[in-house]
Image 1 (cartoon, rainbow, N blue to C red):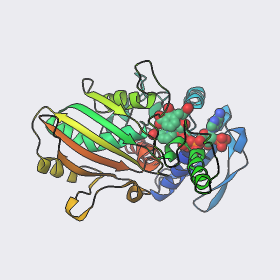
Image 2 (image 1 turned 180 degrees about the horizontal axis):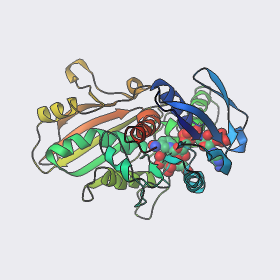
Image 3 (image 1 turned 135 degrees about the vertical axis):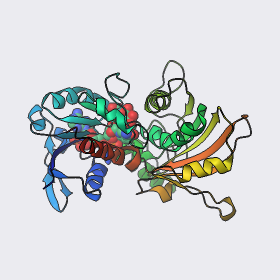
Length: 338
Ligand code: NAP
Ligand code: 3JM
């Protein structure tokens, strides 16, 4: 009989945590026991897993006793506080927050790009930011063939990326505006209904936001490409789920549209949707609920000598967070690391 694992989810009541439960179930991850953890606010909440009602518990140091794999999605400060405790109790932590991603002794893993990096973990493995994940899944195969020098990206990010309460903000503000009423979003930095907001996470000294700098630094670490130049503009749009990205790259060697299409058609977990003559291209609505990264609008960029423009879309709660984390857990099993 094959082994089952004791799995804990910290942040189980959140948008990412609930998606992780769904993905564990769908992919039939070998779970022996599951423990659902959150703050005292939602202790006692019941959540269904494989037909069983599981009660959410307040996270405590003892919560991690006997746990093999702990999937974290409860924000940066919670992760800073609890990951070392979980590791000390013997668990391997797969963390969805930005708290550990750039630490030297923490692998930052996208299974389609750098699966082998899980092998040098010291207890914590970081899951990259949602916008970074979908971009590197699409770009790494091109980088391997033609070496990318430069990436210029603008994101169109769904509100689900800001948590379950931000989804509520979009719906409530839209309803209010249609009825001529006022509603001020509580979990987004500005009005989101009928608007776009060029502000995700906090502004840095260089006038980029932290979300934008995550895309710069995480891309280099995951692709093992410390010299790659990345410039990002991250934008929140009134979409419930599914991030879209306009990506322009410059390669060292020339690349044709046909070559790029061929490379991407053969890339793992990438689906090319690119039929301009039939008005077919990737859209957030179609990526919702899917685990692949969708690429289209592939064309020669007119501003760079060896330039290529692409449109990249994925479900941010799935491939951008939960699915990637569960894939990392699957690698731990595959490589006998738990
Ligand atoms: P969310 O819907 O707001 O859920 C937050 C979860 O964290 C809830 O389960 C909440 O529990 C729990 N939590 C908050 N503070 C806690 C504390 N002090 N102790 C224990 N649990 C606590 O947010 P989300 O969208 O699921 O995102 C959660 C985190 O995942 C984010 O903060 C971010 O770091 C990360 N994330 C990563 C990606 C990615 O790209 N990889 C994408 C989105 C989010 P209660 O119900 O008790 O409040
Ligand atoms: C996505 O602790 C927090 O404030 C969470 C902020 C957050 C992050 C993050 O920095 O961990 C919200 C949504 C992310 C992320 O994936 O980087």
